[in-house]
Length: 275
Image (cartoon, rainbow, N blue to C red):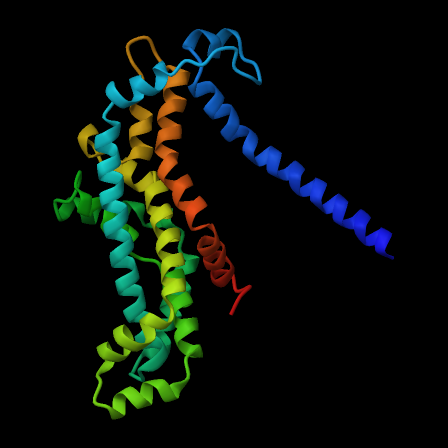
C-alpha cells in the first residue's frame, strides 16, 4: 500500500513539474529574448544565450516613456485599489449587519452583476466618460474599474461569520456603525483585506482594454497600453519589446512572490473553497 502511495505521489510530482515547466517556458523565452541582440533574436534563436546583450533594457528605459507609464500605472492602481476596498467593505457591512428596506434586492443586484460582461458596458462607459470630460485622465481610467462585486461578497461572507455579540457589545457602549466597522470588524480581517488589495491591484495594473480605449495621449498611458507603442522607424524590435514587457511585469511578479500566500488565500476565498 505504501508503495502504491509513493508511486502516486511521484506521478503527481512529475505531472506538477511538467505543468510548471510548460507554464514558465514562455516567461523564460521572453526573458531570453530580452537579453539578446536583435540580430540573434531573428537569426540565432537558441534555448540558451550565446552572449548577453542588455542594450534592449537600456533602450527600454531611456528611449521610451516607461518611467512615466510606471507612474500612471502605480497611481491609478493604488487609487483604484483603495477606493474599491473602501466602497466594498462599507457595502458588505451594510448588507451583512444592517436591516433596511431593499437589502435583499440590493444584494441580488450585486450577484446579478456577475452576469453582465464588462465588454457590454464599454460603449456606455465611454460615452459617460466623454460627457464628463474624463477622457485621457486618471479618473477616466479609474472610475469604471471601481465596481468589484467579488470583493463585496468576500467581505460579506466574513462579516456574516462574526459573532453578533461583538456588534451588540459595541452598540451598548455607544459605538456607531462606523465605529463597529472600522475599529472592530475591519481589524479582525486584515489578512483578507491584504489579500483582496493585492488581487485588486494586480487586476488594475494588468488592465489593458479599458485604458487602451480611454487614453489617447502617450504621456497618460499605463504600462500595458504603453507596450503597444514600442516600435520605431524600422518596425518592431522584439528584444526591446520583450525588455519592456519584462520590466512591466516586474512589480506584479515581485508583489506576487512577496504576498503569494495572501493571493492564494484570496483566490480560495473568492471561489468558495475556504470559508
